[in-house]
Amino acid sequence: MTTEANAQVAVIGGSGFYELEGLTDVREHRAQTPFGDPSDAIVLGTLAGVRMAFLPRHGVGHRIVPSEVPARANIWALKQLGVERVIAVSAVGSLRRGIAPLHLVVPDQFIDRTQGRPSTFFGRGLVAHIAFDRPVCPDVSSSLVASAESVGAEVHKGGTGIVIEGPAFSTKKESMLYQSWGADIIGMTALPEAKLAREAEICYASLSLVTDYDTWHESSQPVTAELILANLTQNVETAKSVVAETVSALSQARECSCGSALSNALVTAPELVPEDVKRELAPIIERYMSVGAGV
Ligand SMILES: [Zn+2]
Image (cartoon, rainbow, N blue to C red; front, top):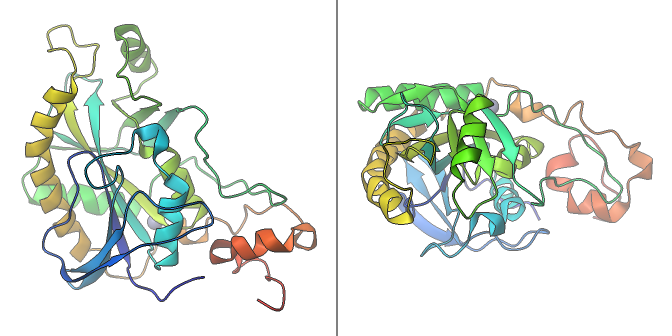
């Protein structure tokens, strides 16, 4: 069931980013979706006059490894709330000397090295191929960069994020291989999240917090969860200021093409799509395909 539009903008918080301060009129929403339960309860509230949803990707208390993040349920639950824009915050390693720990990156490309994660809402008799050549929303990304600059953060506009399966960090050789592919940062969660957001016609942009130099860097300390968490504490405070600043710029209607991503993507002849699939996917396909009578 599609509920009333409870939120316009969502923040998916990554490692270290478990709550969004400054929200007023706060309530908690436990969503159910055809794809299971989201990572945790979604916190709804108002920030800078904008209705917001906040979802901690790894669950409160950080209980969910990247491979287990229920990305489909997370994006679906946000869609049900009426969310049109997602700011996805995540911790990443740097693959470039010029991108130092504590810097922020707003990547504009991804390379997918995840394995076996459910990465589409489609199938079961309904085929769709979304365009993903530009995997993030240009407008939300620009707002993030402008906001980061305005709060005095060191931010890199654009760049390629490689998304690995994890949860182990890379070997040195893997890290060097990813550099040779042109990747700038390395993380474990932006995909399939960004793909699913596009399928749901939600704008998606990534605010990546650099915690370390990954494993290629000869002089760096070994990458450990401990080192990363120490840098995260500082980074997350900056990220929260950036998010607060960005949100106020995101209250107007969308002008990007994210909101019509499915307009040329649905391939299957509508009369051949099973009714139960149409009903289940109604929140994202009903603009394009009539869902049977009696619903
Ligand atoms: Zn967009």
